[in-house]
Image (tube, rainbow, N blue to C red; front, side, top):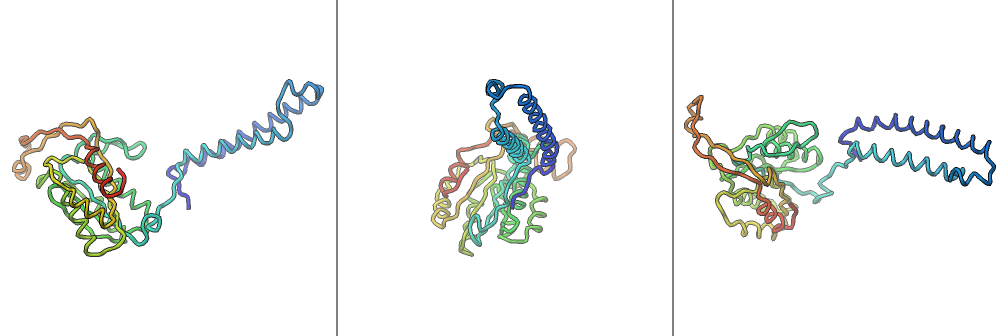
Length: 280
């Protein structure tokens, strides 16, 4: 079944049809006037229309107008688990490191206020659940540690609630260690073999370089593709990390403990996807 991202745009069909009928009526009237006042031998010099070509051209114009309105309305089809992997599960791996609070993102939806990377990741997850209402989803957030919020479940209402209230791991293990979510994913796969997929949402940065090739090899061996979604800009931004003790004590003017630069790292995200047979 086809759904529409901007269904109100379909209302443009009403003025479109009205203008088309007006064009048909005016054009037909002009042809009749020519036919009445011009000899048939000279009609070919004044118009290329015959009865058949006129009808075909008007229908072509109507069809093009309808297609343009339909395209503006944003048609899409809801995916199902059967369209991905029959009976399978999808695990959402969401980067919750401190760098995900950077605000160098683009609007996820039209007319939307700016979001930071983590808020955009949450919105992406909610949209994915809406597009796959029959799916089974699990949820993991990670930084230097991994937190398994939910194993794969079909209770998407509960999962949406979890996603809406997620927060970053702001003052504990704030850097990204990609071995942690991949290990959590492998643990799920080992406990319940089947058709698995994962979607990893991150800026791709590894502040501490770790070797993830063994985890990627095991995922590829178990046929678990990890699709990656990059958040943030290539240009990057500077961020400041406040002293945790000042935050915990409620200081009105917390001191800055660390200032660092963060940007999206396409190479790491592309490597994770390609190594597991997926796409970035």
